[in-house]
Image (cartoon, rainbow, N blue to C red; front, side, top):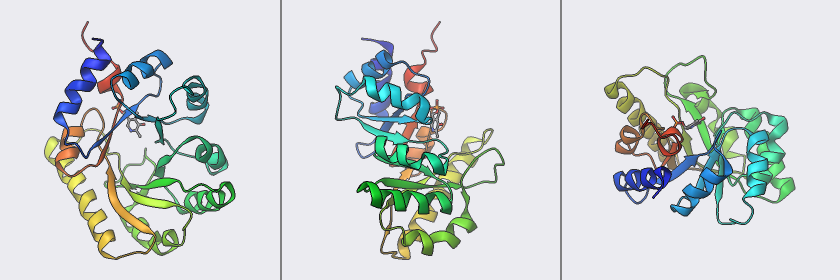
Length: 222
Ligand SMILES: *Cc1c(COP(=O)(O)O)cnc(C)c1O
C-alpha cells in the first residue's frame, strides 16, 4: 500500500460518512492524483486554472471525478472555471457572483457554489466579511443560475485549538442564521471548512466538506 492510500484510509476512519473529503491536488503530480483516485477519492480541489486544466486533460479517462475550484477567481476567468469545475468554493465578492450567474445562463450550466466568508479579519485572504455578506444576500438570492449551497471559510494562521473550534462554530451559526431567513435561492446545507491542520476541529463544528492537501499527499516520514 502506498503512503497516499494509507493516509487516505486513516483520514476516512476519522470522518463521519456525510463529510466529503476533497483532495487538494495543487502542486501534486498526475500519478499521485491517480493514486488518490485508486484509494477511492472522487473529489479533487485545485486553486489555479493554469495548473488544473492540463491535469484534468490527462485524467479524462476518469470521468467520475468531481472538480472543486478553491482559489481566488478573477472575474475574467469565470467562463473557464465553469467549463471545468462542478463546484466553486471561493465565490468571494458580489461582482464575481453576478458574473458567474450570467455565464452560467450562457453556458447552460448550474454551478454549485459556496460563499467564501472571513470569520476573523485577515488582510491576506479573500472573502466577504460577515456584515458584507449579510448585506449582499438579497442580490445573491437573485443569482438564480447559481446553486448557492453554503459557506466556505479559511481561518487565519496561528489560532489556538479553542479559537479555531469557536471560529468554525461561528461559521455554522452564520449558515444556520442565513438558512433561517428562508431565501428562495440560497441553500445553506454545506460548510466547506477544515484543512490539514484543523480539519478535525472543523468536523467537530459541523463541516460537510474538508479540503486536505498536505495531509494526503505529503509524506512527512523521512
Ligand atoms: C491549499 C489549500 C487547501 C489545503 O491545504 P493543506 O493545509 O495542504 O491541507 C485547502 N483549501 C484551500 C483554499 C487551499 O488553497
